[in-house]
Length: 416
Image 1 (cartoon, one colour):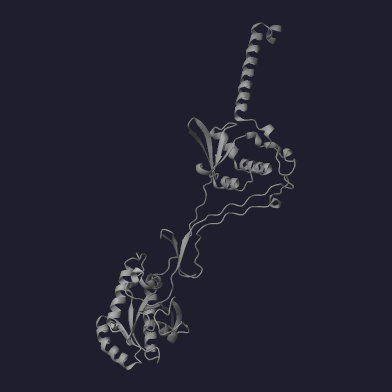
Image 2 (image 1 turned 135 degrees about the vertical axis):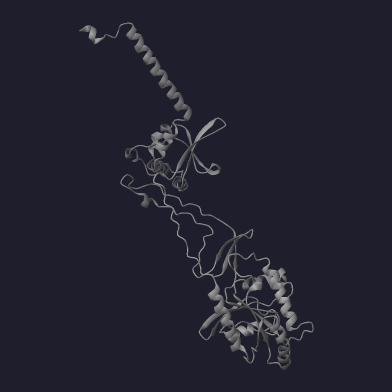
């Protein structure tokens, strides 16, 4: 939903989804596989294998929803915030005569002349809310995005140790403590610097009206705009809604324009083959590391229990140019080739003769005659065969040279 903050388990903010349609991919899913029908070709009329799907990524994240509203109503429990939202909008929050009636923020849309803005009824705050007391942190996070704050002060409270001035000072102190932990960046205005309005509520009670008239000059002396209201008789609500509309319109005008998304194009180089082959050596052993998006993806999609699927992988790698690159890097038959990262690679004994024509693809489905055990000697056997061949060539040369010295070879020029 609009206003969702995506965080890692360590508290790092990964994304702040503001605006309808905002999107962030936390963990990408794997690419789907292909059935054998999609792999048929003139060479493979009826493939006996399929491509596996790739595994997707996994990540544990914390999703935190912060209400997006233009105005936030803050104050003690039972100060009349929910009643105020119900009086100036079509919202119908739960209203009762006991504290903490509101457990989740309520949003209402207010129309004041041509201005239209949203109001959030933040659940009641108490001393210590900035440290989580009374679920204060759960409530305070919903005012982070609001442009205007409204202090709803209860002028008819019956608690002996409370009055509008002390209530305001306590809530302001909690807001200042909470704002110190936000680390606000990117042009957002700190909570203590945002426009604030004071609404002296419940003036329909005579004693409350007298108290409101008494404290209003002191609040105005602090530079705050004060409205005397009653959610029961709707007195002063029209003036309050138009006053809020004025501040909201000003905040919208002064807000920085959203930056357009930059489209960055990174075309591949003309000589980029899409993979790399590197000769590696460790502990006297030599192998060749093959890295690249396509080869690694093809390996993940291959069912190595199916010989035909392995043959298909060999054909794909050959068409990509892997065979030529291995030759150019100095690989010989029987060398070890690792495809993928070092900690999780697939190891092959390279056999260049695996590449051949379509005449060997006519075996039973799921098989490939090119990779039968009898046609794939071990590396040691290949080296012995190579040594025997070289010895045979040396003996043949020596025998021919001996025959020539003994005169068994005649020069055609001498015969003429």
